[in-house]
Image (tube, rainbow, N blue to C red; front, side, top):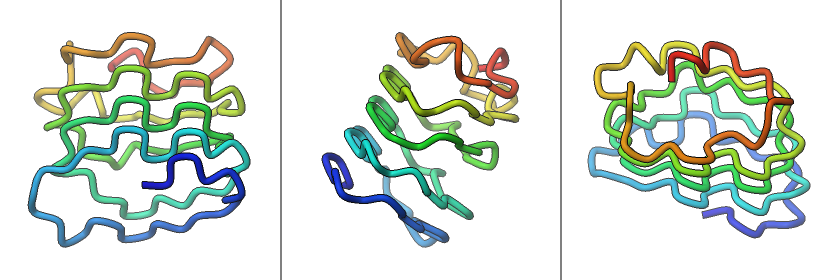
Length: 124
């Protein structure tokens, strides 16, 4: 959706997807948004999302709080944060408590490296 938007620095997606009822994929949604540093995802609905692979690949975002996201229907997280070199803080609190989230099929290379402060990522 925003993949490759190399001049995008600020994006407010408050209440995005609130009325969505069909399955959706977020694959590559924010990939290659290298100068995007201000991303607001308040009340960002992910209830019917099934694929989040490569979602933040090479994004310039420095901090993400995704603790309110419903990832219970997601089957693929592969490379979700890969090469997101600016990302230093990531909150995934409660992802591991969602019924189908633990031991999800495809989670390879989900993190770029250990510089990311992953809040409760061990539950994932």
